[in-house]
Structures are given as structure tokens and as C-alpha cells.
Length: 218
Length: 232
Image (cartoon, rainbow over all chains, first blue to last red; front, side, top):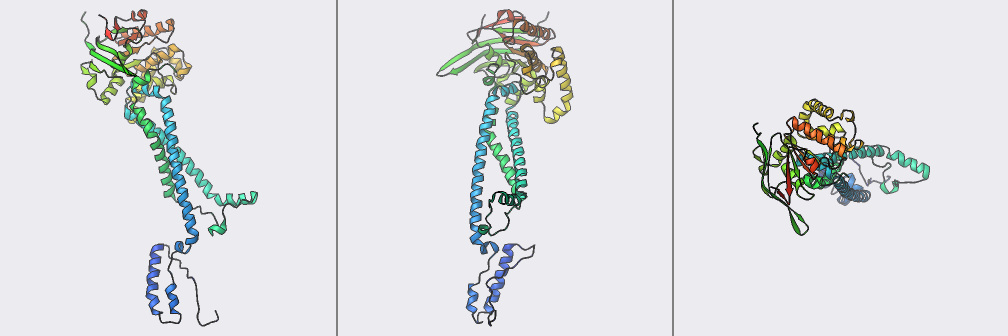
């Protein structure tokens, strides 16, 4: 820094709380466009042409891109898990309804409507979805809130370094919870249960009582 | 003595089933009339179509052709809602194999038709009255000590009495019984028939299906079903 020309290779700007990243970036870019022509004739002014205005995501692109890919892959895996859940719920409900054919016939013989039978099994599926997703969400929340502690313990006890800080360039495992995302996941889990149970519930509702009551005492 | 009016009428009722490639005609033009307060037995060999006829009379199945009327209302012209109401309020079914719900206790099984006919709010308002009615029925049927028992904890006769209680819960005008003693020993079966006789004396209309002539003889009138037709 002893020479006449002072150089910097990066300026980091922190915006106020009420300014979004995109708004702040646009404002800085506009200011830069105003400032650059005023220094065009300055010594080494051509260097200003190479200046980029970037937000933090663009600046850290090399690190963030693989993480985004991981996120996409994880989302894809969750979709597969969701499809599997729908299939499992479908099979379980199909088996329940196969075993309860006689009971459905009895309910119809005492005047239960098709809609009520449909509602009965859909309600059952909804309760399973609600209970399952509530337990899952609570467990996930507990796990996420303690994930950094667990990671440290695993390193202390077994020497396992699950979060490679040299790759991610972040000290702690990100564990910020967004409640609207949690609510969406819970909603999707309940919807998966309802979708899985829909076809068996419809077939139960359509059962003719005479078909189901022509059976023995078993 | 003046004869009571006809409440249940079947005219030219035909019903067939497809069994593989062949079509089996089970009912071939059945004509039947049941008066209010009657105890009618329909007798016939296995496969003669007596259970099918009972299911049609009870609105569990529809005939291919012919008319079934209850109190002047054609069952074929009833929509799903009306037919559900008919099965719930007008008819009570007693099956050979009882068909009680294993997850429910005796009281809950008996109360089931009352529960089905009401909305959640309606059920909240009438629950006590329904429980009172079910408890009365349990007393009449000698099941007072079995209120909280599950069906699998009961004997065959007790199960059938619970099934009769369920059938009577909504005070139906017509009681339909499909081989009600078919799964019971003669002594227990006799007890069930005595209950039917008591109910009939109190004015209950009963249509019972059986293959046993001795059991059919307990009814006021016996109708024989042969080859899908009422024998003259």
C-alpha cells in the first residue's frame, strides 16, 4: 500500500434489514454505473470496466452451486419417498378394506351411505397422515435443532467428520427452520395419505352389501 | 276379524346372476304379499333363491325385473338416499352368521343403526335416548350382563340375540331374518324363535327365511320357494 495507486479487489456491502438483496444489488449497480464514467479518464481507469456488482449468491457461486444441486437431488428423493408413501398407503388400505368387506356390508345393511363409507376411510387416512406427519415434524425439528451438537459428538466419539467445512465453507450445518416449509411438508404428507387411500375408499364405498354378506362366520 | 293391510308386496320379481359363462336365473317371477303384523316363513332348498328374495325385499339388492313395494312405495324407484333410509328406519336384518362388528361391544353393535341415521350434532343430542333404548333391548333379550362384552366373548345364541337387538334398534316396521337359527343348536335356536314369536305377538311384522320345515312351522304362514317361484 506504499504506492500512489491504492487498490481493493472486493467491497462487501451489508444492507439494512428492510432492503432485500435484489433491491440493494440493483441500487448498487445503478450507483456504480453513475460513478464509473466520472473516473473513466483517471489513471488505470480501464480497470473499472472489469468491476462486477454481485450479490452474495453470485459471488459464492462455486460453493453454492453444488449445494443447490444437492438440494435438487434431495427434493427428488423426497418426491420418490412421497410416491412410495402413496403406494404403501394404497396397499395398506386395500388390505384393510379386503379384510373389512363383511363389516362394510353390515354398515350398508343398516343404512350407511356410500359417502359415509368414503368419509370413514378418508377420515382414517387423514388421521394417519396428520399423526404421522406431526410425529415426523416433531422428530425432525428436535434432530435439526441439535444437529450441530450431534455432529460434534460423533466427531469426538468416533472421529466421524460428517460436515466437511473445507467443502461447504460454512462453520455449522445450516439448521434454520422455515415454518411455512414445515407446514407444506405436513400438508403434502397428509395429501399423500389421502391420495393413497382414495381408490380403496372409493371401491369400499361402491361395494354391494349382498356381495359382502354372502360369507361364513370367519 | 278384519285382515290387516298389505305392507310388503313383490310382483313378477326376476333375478339372475352370471356364473362364469352361464346365467343362472334365481328368481323367476316371484309374487308375494305380506300383511302388517304377520309372521311369514319362506322355505326352500339351498339355492332356491330365498336369501336373494329376502335381500331384494330389504333393499340390499335390486331385481332385474318386477316390482317390490313397501307401503305403496316402489323400492326400484327409490334413490340411494331413500334406500339407505329404508334400510335404516323401515327394515331390520338378522343374518345367519350374526354379522356383528368385532371391534365394537354389544351395546355399540346394537346402537349402530341409530348412530348411522344421525349427523354428528344429531347424535350428540339423541345419544342418551339411543343408549336408553339399546339398554332396554338388552334387558328384553337377556343380555344385560353382556353390555361391555365383545362379540367373540359371546355364545352363538347371545350373538344372535345381539343381532336381533341391532335389527330392532330403530323400531323397524319389518324384520327380515335370513336363516336366524341356521348356525345354532336346536335349544338355542328355539330360544331365538321364541323371541320372534314374542315380537310378533307385540305386532312386529317378520319375514323369515329357512330351509327347515319345523322352524318354518313356527310362523303364521309358510311360503315355499321352488325353482325361483312361489309354489302354489
